[in-house]
Image (tube, rainbow, N blue to C red; front, side):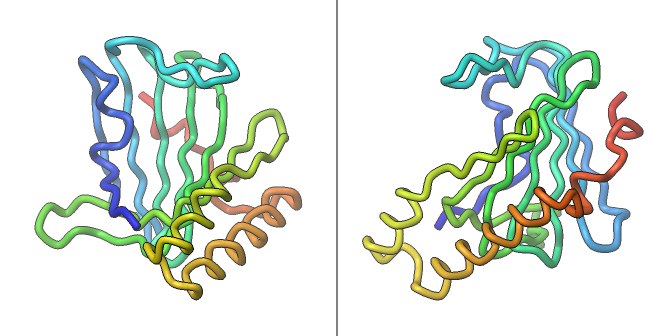
Length: 168
């Protein structure tokens, strides 16, 4: 299981960027990355461009949930994709004051109301290689099921946030 810091994720493609972290919410952290100039666009295997000049990544790291949400937004402030990382723990690093999460390998994407589950093989491999426990494996699958239900029912509070007020 890897600890990932919000201040580093996807910024390796950026030549110039703006990073803002908001700590003022009671139950989650907000991280906004605006890509002013990228080394090259980030294009997924299916041909979708998720990062380019003027694009944003809007991240929410809930304090009391076992997932994070990353929202890819284009230069017209249109949502391109939602990306959920299933996590073991989310928190705030005491030394750096940077939000982080402990990744449980399993991911979910939502694009045009189509839900896709990613990396189930990685989750199984982590269990087989004893990188995670059976309890963590079960937590990842339970969280995935609950998350899918909240996405389908349109009750996921983080997908329903007004993110445009953060996009400058």
